[in-house]
Image (tube, rainbow, N blue to C red; front, side, top):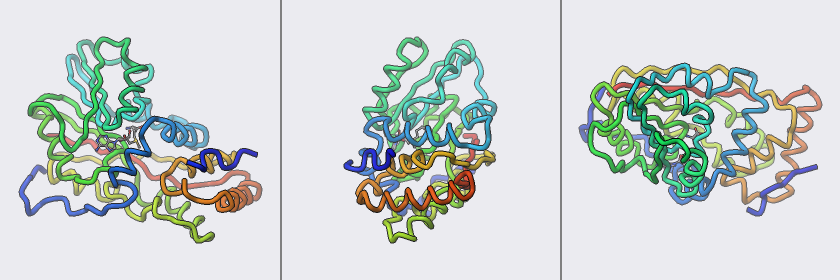
Amino acid sequence: MKLVQGLATTQCSCARNRVENKQMSNMNKRENVKTQYANDKNLLVRVNLHAKHSTNKQGFVPWLFERYTFAEDYHILELGCGNGGQWSGRIEQLPAGCRLLLSDFSEGMVNTVREKYSPHDNVSFAQIDIQSIPFNADSFDIVIANHMLYHIPDLDKALSEVKRVLKPCGCFYCTTNGNGGMRVFLREAMKRYNLDTQVFIKDWSFSLQNGADLLERYLSSVERIDYEDSLAITETQDLIDWLMSTLSIASYSEENVRELYDYFEEIRVRDGTINIPKECGLFISKK
Ligand SMILES: C[S@@+](CC[C@H](N)C(=O)[O-])C[C@H]1O[C@@H](n2cnc3c(N)ncnc32)[C@H](O)[C@@H]1O
């Protein structure tokens, strides 16, 4: 049994409207985020869990691409692109003349996307922190920042930078999770064993619940679209691997992880699958 793999290891920029939600947690402490995303190993483990065990068989990325609107000659910037998974097989589908800049603040991630996508002449790469985007105002038709805004220490800076680099009428797409999804389930499981639940914070700093309010301070026409999904996990090890890919749990003992494995495995044997709710979705906003 493979158990403890990786164990060692509407626009306004006035000051009075600054985004107040600046709680620091393991999710947005710079050093933690840097370690977590030094390369795409942890990300791949988590993507694997969702790819194998999600009940919505359409898949999040195909669903997203039904909602993105690209037109000829668009300049597209993705921030916090990770391993650029969403572009796999889709760059060639971009309308003629589109140029895509894939960026992340992790050098490792930028190297990964460069290796994957450098054969495409219309794709370029850069190491960029969303809080300080090194481009002139009005540079991009589209900016994308998926599942990354909850890692950002200063959301005010990040969102004002996104707004600045968007062309007039440019569009900002960002995905995130809701507060009621799988982390609630996992937090409850871990509490049973008095384990550190800090990585499964109660409220994300940028969530489906508060995202529209935060975005409306900088952008307009904010629309929230939820993706209906859940997990029905048939292999307990995949869930353990997911847990091991998160930061703070990496310091847990082998015994703790074994206890969690046994707890989840009991559920799987009893119910046939480990059923976990998911909450995630997309915000579409205009400059
Ligand atoms: C959960 S991953 C999401 C990756 C990808 N967008 C996706 O949806 O699969 C978060 C990514 O945001 C990046 N990131 C974290 N803080 C960042 C920042 N301040 N500026 C730019 N990227 C950042 C991380 O390096 C990581 O690649």
